[in-house]
Structure formats: C-alpha cells, structure tokens
Image (cartoon, rainbow, N blue to C red; front, top):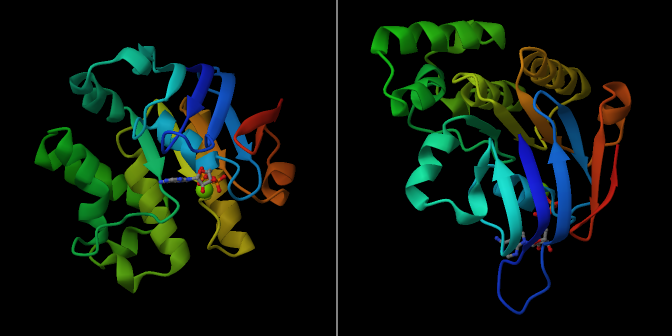
Amino acid sequence: MVRLEQVTLRYRAGEAPALSEIDLELAPGSFTWLTGPSGAGKTSLLSLLHLSLRPSEGRLFVLGCPIHRARRRELPGLRRRIGVIFQDLRLLPHLDVLDNVALPLRIAGRREAQIDADAREILAWVGLAHRLHDRPEALSGGEQQRVALARAVIARPALLLADEPTAQLDEAQARRVIALLREMHRLGSTVVVATHSSSLPAEFPAPILRLEGGRVVAHG
Ligand SMILES: Nc1ncnc2c1ncn2[C@@H]1O[C@H](COP(=O)(O)OP(=O)(O)O)[C@@H](O)[C@H]1O
Ligand SMILES: [Mg+2]
C-alpha cells in the first residue's frame, strides 16, 4: 500500500532534511497513528503520501505506484484514490457545505444525480444533514472538521490521510472525528492520522509511528 525505502526530503538544497532516510511499510487496510513533536516531520511525511511532494532521495511506493520515478501525468489519477484532511481544512469559502463535499466527485466526472445523492448521504453520516446549504464560515470548528472529513472520504479513498484532525476540537468532538476515521478503516481504507496528542492513541489503540527530527524513532 505504502512503502518508503531510504526516503529523504529536503525543502531546500543544502539545508537540513525535513525527513531523513525513512524506511517504512504500511499494510493495506492498516490504521496508523503518526506522532511526534511539532517540527518532527509529520506534515512532510503526509505530503509525500498524498503526492504533493516527491522524495529528494530514496524510493516511495504509494498504491502500488513507484512515485520516485512516476511521470507527472500518472499522478492525478492516483491522487483521486487518496483522501486528505489538511490541518487547515482548506474548505472553499464561496461554496456551501454540499458543494464543498461534492467537489471530488465533480472532478472525477461522476453523474450529477449520483453526486448529489452521495454528498447528502455522507453529510448525514457525519451528522451535518441540516447544514447542507450553509457556507463553511457559518459552521463551528467541529462542524467544519466534519465537512473536511466528508469531502476526504466521499470518493471512498483507498488511502486516507488526516493531519491533526482534532487539533481545534473539544474532547467530545475529537472522539467523534476519530470514530469516523476508524469507521473508514473498518470499511477497508488504509488510514494514517497525525497527532501530537498522546491521549488519542491511548484511547484508540493502533500501531504508532513516531517521528523525531525527521527520523522514525519507533513503529509498532
Ligand atoms: N514548506 C516548507 N519549507 C521549508 N521547510 C519546511 C516546510 N514545511 C516544513 N518545513 C520544515 O520541515 C520540518 C518538519 O516540519 P513538518 O513536517 O511541518 O513537521 P510537523 O508536522 O511534525 O510539525 C521543520 O523543520 C519545518 O520547519
Ligand atoms: Mg504538522
């Protein structure tokens, strides 16, 4: 599903790498907590996994594709099979909740009737059936987080990546978001959730991948 072999990532030549010589394998259908202090490289690793960045060195395989030597035109099709919840959400402010969530299906060129039905269904699943026609700014932080989650999962991604998806939430909201991510895992997605919290991994036990200073210091 995901394999890294001696992957190093440098944002600028000559500077210290954000990730150093990472060896890692994530099995299909696994759920992994990605932990480590701020600046450890969590977001950088997720950026490699959603193909926003390429490794500076080493080999990276995502969904069976060798990203380190893939052609640019191969990437969009692959990206459509990856769902991402960004730390800053990146909801589109001029679109309502329904259209934000429908976007991945529109990009994939699905039929409009199907898009509408799927978007409504997924929004009901995250408890937002009553907010379909609100703009993101009218929603609470927890509600916006669930819109981002709905958008990330609507195309049933094989790989689902979440970057600190509970950072802005109270405990009850955080548990709810994690429960939804675990439900996606139960339905078959490979899930990676970055968090600097230690309480969430304690509450929802799963393998932990710990980064410090751009290196893997523990995995298991
Ligand atoms: N766009 C960027 N340009 C240059 N350096 C970056 C960029 N993003 C992150 N870094 C650096 O890479 C390192 C890892 O950062 P990051 O992946 O954001 O860590 P984390 O998500 O664990 O807080 C840090 O030293 C950070 O300053
Ligand atoms: Mg980060």
